Image (cartoon, rainbow, N blue to C red; front, top):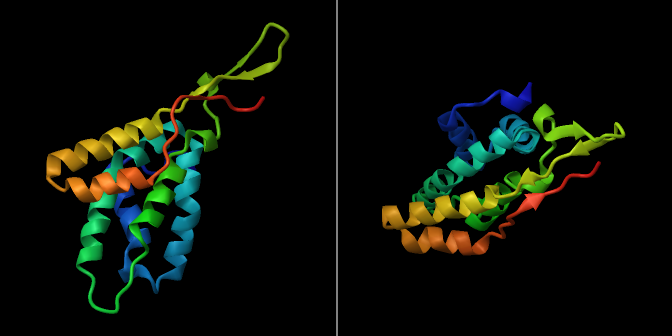
Length: 159
Protein backbone atom coordinates (compact mmCIF):
# COMPACT_ATOMS: atom_id res chain seq x y z
CA UNK A 1 0.00 0.00 0.00
CA UNK A 2 2.76 2.47 0.86
CA UNK A 3 4.70 1.88 -2.33
CA UNK A 4 2.56 4.10 -4.53
CA UNK A 5 0.24 5.93 -2.15
CA UNK A 6 1.60 9.40 -2.94
CA UNK A 7 2.20 10.27 -6.56
CA UNK A 8 1.48 13.99 -6.26
CA UNK A 9 4.76 15.84 -5.73
CA UNK A 10 3.06 18.77 -4.00
CA UNK A 11 1.46 16.46 -1.43
CA UNK A 12 4.79 14.73 -0.80
CA UNK A 13 6.56 18.08 -0.45
CA UNK A 14 4.00 19.28 2.09
CA UNK A 15 4.31 16.03 4.06
CA UNK A 16 8.10 16.42 4.28
CA UNK A 17 7.87 20.10 5.24
CA UNK A 18 5.25 19.24 7.84
CA UNK A 19 7.59 16.60 9.29
CA UNK A 20 10.29 19.21 9.96
CA UNK A 21 8.08 22.23 10.67
CA UNK A 22 8.45 23.44 14.28
CA UNK A 23 4.70 24.18 14.32
CA UNK A 24 4.07 20.40 14.35
CA UNK A 25 6.37 19.66 17.30
CA UNK A 26 3.41 18.90 19.58
CA UNK A 27 1.83 16.46 17.12
CA UNK A 28 3.85 13.37 18.04
CA UNK A 29 1.45 10.94 16.34
CA UNK A 30 1.80 12.69 12.99
CA UNK A 31 5.56 12.95 13.27
CA UNK A 32 5.84 9.29 14.25
CA UNK A 33 3.70 8.25 11.29
CA UNK A 34 5.82 10.33 8.92
CA UNK A 35 9.07 9.07 10.46
CA UNK A 36 7.98 5.57 9.45
CA UNK A 37 6.24 6.43 6.20
CA UNK A 38 8.84 8.64 4.50
CA UNK A 39 11.79 6.19 4.47
CA UNK A 40 9.56 3.21 3.66
CA UNK A 41 7.92 5.15 0.85
CA UNK A 42 11.27 6.18 -0.62
CA UNK A 43 13.05 2.86 -0.26
CA UNK A 44 10.16 0.80 -1.63
CA UNK A 45 10.26 1.97 -5.26
CA UNK A 46 12.74 3.78 -7.47
CA UNK A 47 9.96 6.08 -8.72
CA UNK A 48 9.23 7.17 -5.15
CA UNK A 49 12.91 7.80 -4.49
CA UNK A 50 13.15 9.86 -7.66
CA UNK A 51 10.03 11.79 -6.64
CA UNK A 52 11.66 12.60 -3.29
CA UNK A 53 14.84 13.74 -5.05
CA UNK A 54 12.76 15.96 -7.34
CA UNK A 55 11.07 17.76 -4.43
CA UNK A 56 14.13 17.94 -2.15
CA UNK A 57 15.40 21.31 -3.44
CA UNK A 58 11.99 22.88 -2.90
CA UNK A 59 11.77 21.35 0.57
CA UNK A 60 15.21 22.70 1.51
CA UNK A 61 14.35 26.13 0.14
CA UNK A 62 11.04 26.22 2.05
CA UNK A 63 12.69 25.07 5.28
CA UNK A 64 15.53 27.58 4.92
CA UNK A 65 12.93 30.33 4.60
CA UNK A 66 10.92 28.91 7.50
CA UNK A 67 14.05 28.89 9.67
CA UNK A 68 14.64 32.57 8.96
CA UNK A 69 11.10 33.44 10.03
CA UNK A 70 11.18 31.70 13.41
CA UNK A 71 10.25 33.73 16.45
CA UNK A 72 12.79 34.23 19.21
CA UNK A 73 13.03 31.08 21.32
CA UNK A 74 11.47 28.91 18.62
CA UNK A 75 13.76 26.15 17.38
CA UNK A 76 13.90 24.04 14.29
CA UNK A 77 15.98 21.04 13.34
CA UNK A 78 19.16 22.10 11.54
CA UNK A 79 19.22 22.17 7.76
CA UNK A 80 22.13 19.73 7.79
CA UNK A 81 19.89 17.19 9.58
CA UNK A 82 17.16 17.75 6.98
CA UNK A 83 19.70 17.28 4.19
CA UNK A 84 21.12 14.15 5.76
CA UNK A 85 17.64 12.63 5.96
CA UNK A 86 16.83 13.59 2.37
CA UNK A 87 20.10 12.05 1.20
CA UNK A 88 19.33 8.90 3.20
CA UNK A 89 15.82 8.66 1.74
CA UNK A 90 17.25 8.99 -1.78
CA UNK A 91 20.15 6.56 -1.32
CA UNK A 92 19.74 3.98 -4.10
CA UNK A 93 21.71 1.43 -2.06
CA UNK A 94 18.73 1.23 0.31
CA UNK A 95 16.19 0.59 -2.43
CA UNK A 96 14.20 -2.60 -1.94
CA UNK A 97 13.84 -4.03 -5.42
CA UNK A 98 10.24 -5.17 -5.82
CA UNK A 99 9.83 -4.37 -9.48
CA UNK A 100 9.46 -7.50 -11.63
CA UNK A 101 11.47 -5.77 -14.37
CA UNK A 102 14.49 -5.59 -12.05
CA UNK A 103 14.44 -9.32 -11.30
CA UNK A 104 15.30 -12.08 -13.76
CA UNK A 105 16.49 -15.68 -13.74
CA UNK A 106 19.65 -17.05 -15.30
CA UNK A 107 19.82 -20.22 -17.46
CA UNK A 108 20.20 -22.39 -14.35
CA UNK A 109 17.03 -20.92 -12.86
CA UNK A 110 18.82 -18.79 -10.28
CA UNK A 111 17.32 -15.45 -9.41
CA UNK A 112 19.29 -12.43 -10.60
CA UNK A 113 18.66 -8.90 -9.44
CA UNK A 114 19.74 -6.28 -11.94
CA UNK A 115 21.79 -3.29 -10.92
CA UNK A 116 19.74 -0.24 -10.01
CA UNK A 117 20.70 3.10 -11.47
CA UNK A 118 22.33 4.86 -8.53
CA UNK A 119 22.21 8.30 -10.10
CA UNK A 120 19.35 9.51 -7.88
CA UNK A 121 21.90 11.47 -5.83
CA UNK A 122 23.46 12.88 -8.97
CA UNK A 123 20.02 14.05 -10.07
CA UNK A 124 19.43 15.52 -6.60
CA UNK A 125 22.74 17.42 -6.73
CA UNK A 126 21.92 18.73 -10.21
CA UNK A 127 18.46 19.87 -9.03
CA UNK A 128 19.96 21.64 -5.99
CA UNK A 129 22.55 23.37 -8.14
CA UNK A 130 19.96 24.37 -10.73
CA UNK A 131 17.61 25.72 -8.04
CA UNK A 132 20.42 27.62 -6.36
CA UNK A 133 21.56 29.25 -9.57
CA UNK A 134 18.10 30.14 -10.88
CA UNK A 135 16.66 31.60 -7.68
CA UNK A 136 19.49 33.87 -6.69
CA UNK A 137 19.93 32.07 -3.36
CA UNK A 138 23.24 30.62 -4.45
CA UNK A 139 25.09 30.70 -1.15
CA UNK A 140 22.47 28.90 0.96
CA UNK A 141 21.62 26.08 -1.41
CA UNK A 142 25.20 25.64 -2.59
CA UNK A 143 26.21 25.32 1.03
CA UNK A 144 23.51 22.68 1.46
CA UNK A 145 24.79 20.84 -1.58
CA UNK A 146 28.34 20.87 -0.20
CA UNK A 147 27.17 19.41 3.12
CA UNK A 148 25.50 16.31 1.74
CA UNK A 149 27.37 13.16 0.74
CA UNK A 150 26.09 11.92 -2.60
CA UNK A 151 26.64 8.56 -4.24
CA UNK A 152 26.44 7.78 -7.94
CA UNK A 153 26.69 4.79 -10.21
CA UNK A 154 24.99 1.44 -10.48
CA UNK A 155 24.01 -0.24 -7.24
CA UNK A 156 24.07 -4.04 -7.25
CA UNK A 157 21.64 -5.62 -4.80
CA UNK A 158 22.39 -8.98 -3.19
CA UNK A 159 20.95 -12.19 -4.63
